[in-house]
Every structure is written in structure tokens, then in C-alpha cells.
Image (cartoon, rainbow, N blue to C red; front, top):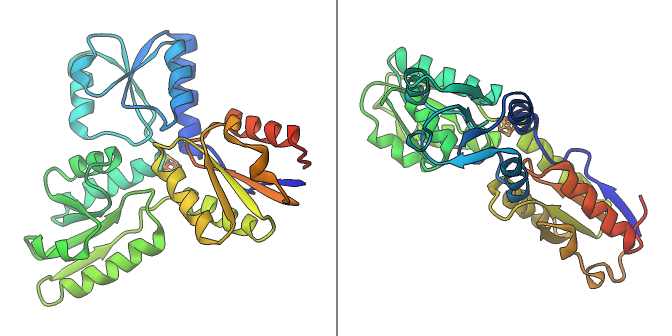
Length: 283
Ligand code: SF4
């Protein structure tokens, strides 16, 4: 049985950078709090906790020391409070999220109402909204554009959304807003990394009979990756760890593939490859 790894899989550069920054702080300066989980993966969070990184949901839970902002970023109020309280900041905001925040801020300063294509409850979107200074709203429904007050509207996207879906949204908003707006601007702030994992998995699906998608069940990006794989028609197994692979899953197969979401660490993928080798797989 042949085992093939997707050409692009696992940690994206933004998450890899965030974990490395937190680990460097833990090694050099000791314990810190992180404002939310640094990555949506229970094993990585547990490992970091063992080394001294405590997850908090709110700054009020941090009395002293260092605090890390995650790759999803945070609003300007969070930075102000960290500065005012004299806490040490470890800012792991992904540079691609930072660009979206800058766009949200600049467009709102220029007088646009900023409509964010994304989920209002997502931490990254919360940060983007905060950067609009109260002149933004977030939605996935183009009809919401009807709620926008004022003649100028700007559209940006949550970074992990699909670029094509964002442009479809922009097209629908344009239609919904006809005759009401004087100016409409759309800025694609999506991140190419998510799409790269999808395309590599679709490509892999053409050469194998089954794909193991490795990642945490609480990771939205891994769940979506599993959906993309399933839609190709290939046999799909969404697993959190190597020990979920049963010999029966491989019965009669001559080629299987492996991919992983943007929040899945390399060790989890290595463990899956080792388990497949144990069960007769070869690279
Ligand atoms: S998915 Fe893209 S925007 Fe999000 S952390 Fe990774 S590199 Fe940054």
C-alpha cells in the first residue's frame, strides 16, 4: 500500500510563527498568559501549558507578567490596556491578519462603513471590527448590506475565508446596494494558505483511494478541509490522532493519502505516517 502526503499540509506560516514566538518567550523569560488558545489544537495547547503558557479568555484574568496576543490578533483596546497596566506584550498577530486590520482601520478613517465578510463571533473578526472604531459590521449574508448607513461602503474579508466566496459576496452586495451608495470598495484580505491546503488535498485525492485528514475536531479549518476532501468522492477519515486508524480502514486499498489542517502540528502527522507504516504502508 502506497502512502502519499499532500504537497501542502499542516501548520500555516502564521501559526508556526506564533508557536515559535511563545516557545522562545517560555525558554528565555518564563511563564506567560495567552489571550485565547495560540492554536486550535488540544495537544499543542497542553504541551505549551506544561511549559508555562496559561490560556485566559480575558485580560482581566492576567494580574502581572507577560501576555501573548494570538495569530488572530486583537483590537486596539487590548493593546492600550496592556500598555496601561505595564504588562509585557508578546504580539504573535499574523502579518496577513495585521494587513487586514490596517485596511479596516484605514478605510473607516477615510469615512467608509466597513462590511467584513466573516463570522462575527470569530476572534479575528472581533479584532477587525474593533479596528473599525465602531464603523463596521460582520456578516456572511449579502442582504445585511441593506443595514449600512451612509453613502460609502468598503468590503474586506476574514482572512481564512475562500477568496472566490468573498468575490461572490462582493458581487451580491453590489447588487443589494444598487441605487443607495455613492462609493463601494472591495479589498481581498483573504489568506492564500487555506486555499493552498484545499487544492493540494484535491490533487492528492486523484491519486489515492482514501485520505486521512489529521487535526483537532474543534479546528474549523480542519473540518472544512475534511469537507473539501469528502466532496472529491474519495474515502475520507477525519482523525485527531494516529491510534484512531484501524486495520479495517485500509482493507483492500493500494494507495492512501494524508493531509492536515493549518493548526495541526508536524508531530501529529509524523505519528499518523508511522502508524500507516506499521500497518503495511510504504512511502
Ligand atoms: S491561515 Fe493565513 S492569516 Fe491565518 S494565521 Fe495562517 S498564515 Fe496567517
